Image 1 (tube, rainbow, N blue to C red):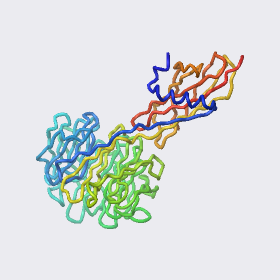
Image 2 (spheres, rainbow, N blue to C red):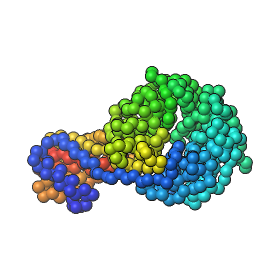
Image 3 (tube, one colour):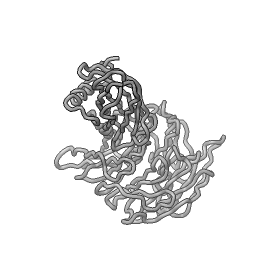
Image 4 (cartoon, rainbow, N blue to C red):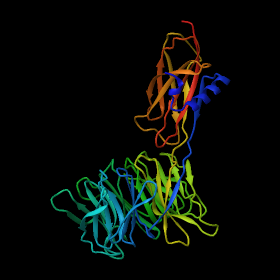
Length: 464
């Protein structure tokens, strides 16, 4: 098998050239392919929530004051505007992506929309009443039920649930403690469906609560008012990590994103952003997208799990020197494969919104390969190495190992592959038969989050 069978022949040629200039025992290289972002003007002027349907490659956006649900494709092009959705506010997507549930604040109901036909198929009365201080606004799927936040009057909010598992829908209202001074935001995560987090902010005193909903009831696990060392003014958004161990919140102040342990809502770090945090979304691999409503600062920051410093930012350009483009509250969402981020923005002086499709969350990746400087012919030779990137590697990753017995000839053989551990490490054992300088090149083909990368090492193979 010759080198032309590499997926990245040009990259390997560069590696060969570098190795011939200096035959070191450890080298590493990485590349990041460029990709273009897009932005599309939307035919709506209000927004509250977004859901991403990977099964049909669709994005749903709520238009509460236009009574619509807008559907676009992954490039931001409009697919359909679903009308008659009174006060469409929050979303929850079923686990199989077949149904989008919509909180209809102005109808006091939850609508079910078929994601294939884009038609409303059912509507469930929540019993809350309808309107700004009554109907449901936020949805989350947890514990086998749909949970919704709603207002009981102008000063109070509560939790309710909708059970669709039986022959008839069952609504339960007034769950959880009397904690919220308005309709709470809700968050859940598919991998830990028995954890539900609710949050509400009125002025400087945000309220957070964590519930165990495994029994079908909202059993309080932790509560906290005015969380964080600097408080939390005007909470705008929240998201759970995939393991449900932490909740990250975006409050207009302080000027950073805060994290809390769900076990007890104790402070658990901060993410350095800037003025007026207003959005947060967490990818299935734990990468955090944190957004701010800052006119002169980067709008979106990406954080690797466990890292409080952003490894990538975006700053949306303004349409003119006299205008600004700002991210909308709750205006971030990931594709489930973590390959794209969708962001909803608005230009000052305009009533319309824009969907920004951010297509390069891929990160530069480095492959480092190590081997003995020399090794006897026909003896086991073990290569070790590591993939390194700001974002971790999931299970199932692997690297290909190529052996080039004559680097000057530039011909090589694919001799095997090696699994990559969670920390990026790998090893491979070969038994070379040719004497002289033998080059091993390790290729990692990348994924939705990581760029293609390769690394090489040259070993002097001596007599037996």
